[in-house]
Amino acid sequence: MKKQKTKEQAQSGISKTCPGPMVFSKGAVISEPGSTMKYKTGNWRTYKPVIERAKCIKCGICWANCPDAAIKKDSDGTFIVDYDYCKGCLICDKLCPVKAISHGVEQK
Ligand code: SF4
Ligand code: SF4
Image 1 (cartoon, rainbow, N blue to C red):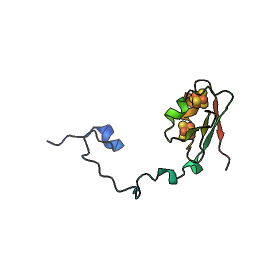
Image 2: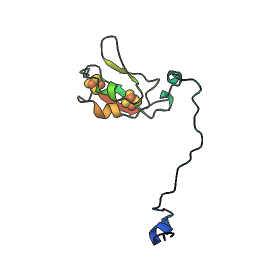
Image 3: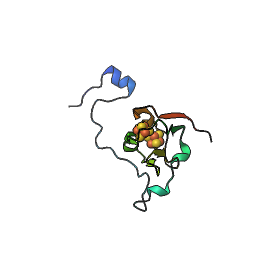
Image 4: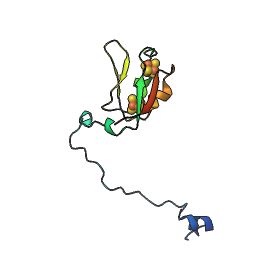
């Protein structure tokens, strides 16, 4: 038996019944495995995080949580942002326990 839509569902166009399997069209094609480093993603960043070296306690929280692996270690063990890959999500800024990371709007 076919279920009747509620008045609200009919008005909103939203159905509470399962629409069935979702079919996605093809998106990006990875033609060469392991090629991530070739694609620099930092050029469309809106916010730019900046690590203040003097405040950094080298805990590595920013490094461990950066979704783009855009935080690297300097020769003296201080963490630095690789702006070629940083997308400006500011997760690092949010998580830094000593507020050593600040941010501003990226200047192009
Ligand atoms: S989270 Fe903050 S204190 Fe920890 S390594 Fe990163 S910048 Fe330094
Ligand atoms: S802003 Fe986001 S992408 Fe950039 S270094 Fe911080 S966590 Fe990584």
